[in-house]
Length: 297
Image (cartoon, rainbow, N blue to C red; front, side):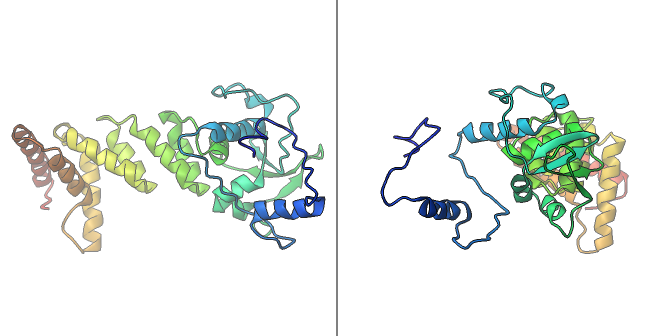
């Protein structure tokens, strides 16, 4: 009905004789909670829009835009439509970040993150105080800037945020702290765009530190392409030595994961006879490096 007869209507009048407020209230309770027992509290809400349909993301991004403090609005990317003046999104929590107030909704943050679920629970919440203007209770977040929290905000509401590679490093550490694996993956995608000979080792270290397997694989794949230049770089040599030391400590295998991954990607690019010689040159450069630093693997 919402897709056909009621489409576009902001008010729907139900006149069926069997529909009364009590019965319709029970129906709403079931739709939102999947139970009919009174006193049920919904902590997680999952919404699955049709694939490739951006409308829900755009609507949720509008909610995030309304949660922004006035001083930050207008500094970000343009949304499809502006937040209406005087629109009340009914926030039930205020996050204070470096003096800025973000008016948010607990259900979104609790559904996204175990960190926020614990933070907003009575037993774990930080010092909470009511807003002086009669607004929702406020929680102060430390160790994060308003700009970085804005990325967290948009991800929590819309499953997406526009991330520059420069901002991705700071957002990544916060996403890890706030237990937001999806946001960490978005950071990984952003960092993968800036891989070059100067940055690939550093990005690979970040990928390992934050357990971003896809980004780590992209780094080793890029290393395989430029290995003849990388073997002359001190940061790459140090990375190989550290990997070897970590393996030796485990005493389970004599292989080095970083070296194995590079070898795999070098071999996987060989699809023609003409590519065999080039692959052999890359592998030879890697083997020469291992010999020069006293590693046999």
